[in-house]
Length: 531
Image (cartoon, rainbow, N blue to C red; front, side, top):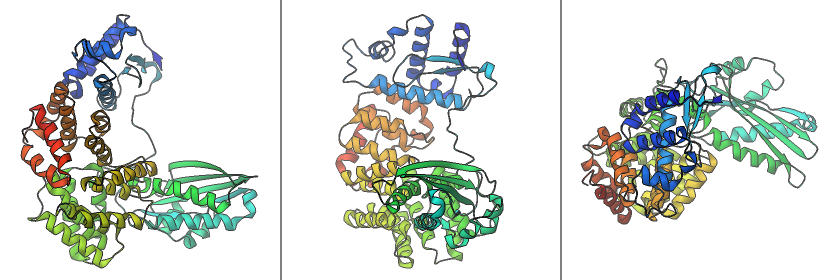
């Protein structure tokens, strides 16, 4: 890559970008980008400070003080996100990249034309869509013992057994017993053949090397169909002052949350594909897959497919506790997104969650779904008990940490909620959009609007009504009326008939009337939606 100083080419690239939807719908972002690009072309890079951008782009007065007004920083975040969206879509093969580095406002102009490559900002973690359409099944193969660990295979077997046991705590993952996979300790077979013989979608392989007091553990997640590596990480620990079993437990407690749960690598590799495999005839497996698919995509069509699949699966297998629980969850979600399902969705959800817990009192999904349903019946303490029970069943599951965090925020349990939020993102950086909404609402509750908006701007999901609603609410409290109008224009197809839904959902969801009133007041201040 190389920088470029061809002003005509840069201006042509600027015009291409400004025709992109994100910029056409936002006069502020268009002015911002044009202003900083032209400033560099004209040799005025040193003038690109918060104050000059605020007064020339955002039309703030001479009294603007960046210490008290974060508008420029907020729009810079939006600008960088819009540029990434452009280069990931329409501009993926453009010859010039215009980027605005974090921490400054002076754009860089980079050409890839001579490199023969295309540009993408999306992180590549492996082929995460390779194994769509089957139940997530994993086997931990015996790790290779190297160095001084070569004579301590019993310790290696103990590590692998513990890793298998911890994975089996996730109710949405099937784990092959280590006893079965241990027979491949010295096998030289192709990993794809081993996966077929064990009937697994994924394999976990690795090595444990001891060099004096230093332990090096390398773990790999392998696609069982293709034999390709999806993830790999090496951990280094010293056993000079710690027992080896303590070191092993520390490493396992780090690895498990990254692999397990809805947003762990195992399930993300199954769910992120566009469509499930229609050839699978196991209705329960297919129904759960559609639910996972919905939890990633949040699209109405997928929602209804998930509901229908679960309804049919439960007719065939009425003892499927997890099925009752996740159908209950979907019934609660329906009214929140304006999707029509059954006549009394909250009542049906509470009933189905109770059935799940009658079948299996340790069903983690059942406790989560019952807590979520009880929120809408204003049963705050009972809902709180079920969230805590769900957490106690498997504390390593980052999804349940995040879900309970949002649920407890809705109950008004703010400090416990933010504690769980931090636990969730520490365990696994991949999480659904509403985990960031939890943090945003927490800071909205504390009147820290700048931080709240920063979290909302980081939410990437598209075509979902609640993200722009909350952004507009916070912008209303910050008197960012032009920015709120931009947000409305970009999402008018979602918001133009949303007033009734907002009036119903916000007070029904948030048990603290101060928070729900604050959200509605922020929206009303903008004059864009009368709620």
